[in-house]
Amino acid sequence: MKFPIPIFIGYDHRERAATNVLIDSLYQHSSVPLSITPLVTSQLEKQGLFWRERDPKQSTDFSFTRFLIPYLMNYQGWALFMDCDMLCRGDIAKLWELCDERFSVMCVQHEHQPTETVKFQGEIQSPYPKKNWSSLMLMNCSGCKVLTPDFVNTASGLELHRFHWLLDDEKIGSLSDAWNHLVSVQTSEKGSSAEMLHWTLGGPWFLDQRTMGGVLAAEWYAARDDAFKLWD
Image 1 (cartoon, helix red, strand yellow):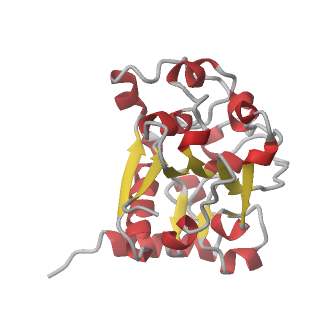
Image 2: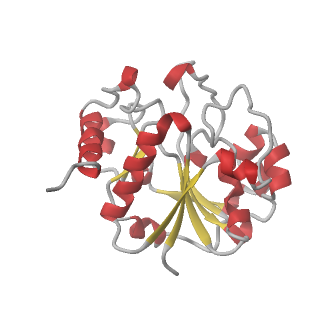
Image 3: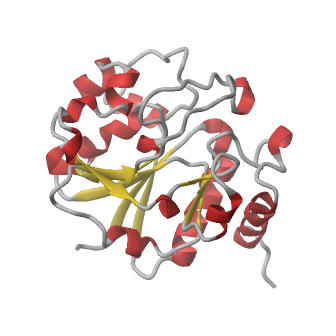
């Protein structure tokens, strides 16, 4: 595999703190060079790549922009996407080693069936099959050529997030849920050994959710403080 590893992070203006802490955690734990690009919607709009109206069910700025990654990669090689509300604990090189040319996309195949109707900041919680699968994706860009800017700007949210554009679920490879542990959704026992924590319901960077995840929230604060500590 070639380095640096291209990583794209979904960016939401309300979660700048989460984005910066995630980026630092990726660098701190990686044994190989990384190339990290936040997907800022306003930048993509200025480049003429994103123009769709905001969907009422869209809870973040990056709900759809993640599917532009194969185009941004010129449909060549592999790339990693992740939501910004994550914290990396493991060496991302281990995840990169799992890239398998048999698949167009690889992800943690959660069976997440939300019981709540709202999540962070009062955003609607939308239940659907393959919920959270697209929150962390290894994308084999040559196998995702259907994801043109025109398609990404016109396809429905469910068509994109449920991977209908692949036409065949056999093209979706499975990753261990250690690489996308859903904080306060999955059991705390699994969280203790997870390589990647994901505050899908909202995280401690929001004042009203500053204890979300209990000890895991404390871990996020420690990572934040380490990232921004002052040196003599």
